[in-house]
Amino acid sequence: MHRRCRPGAHGTAAHTLKGSARGIGAWRVAEAAERLEQAAIGAADAAAMLAAIAELEAASFETRLAIGVHLRQVHAAPVPDSGRVRDH
Image (cartoon, rainbow, N blue to C red):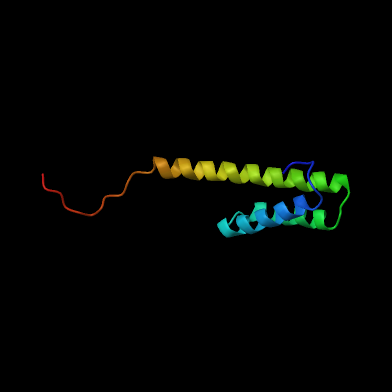
């Protein structure tokens, strides 16, 4: 999220991200997005907004790492046999 945007944009973007993160089970991202949404709605001071943004950035980074590890494990796993008997 860009730090210079129209008033309310952080809250709207955080709300959207919160719902998307919940939809895929990225609970830490959803919680951080909810905190940013609340800070934006509550007109928190600049320090609180920056802290909420930093928390969301950290949660997003951790989630991207976890997804990357999962994808590498999936691609490295052997393909299961279909169970069919083959003619040799």
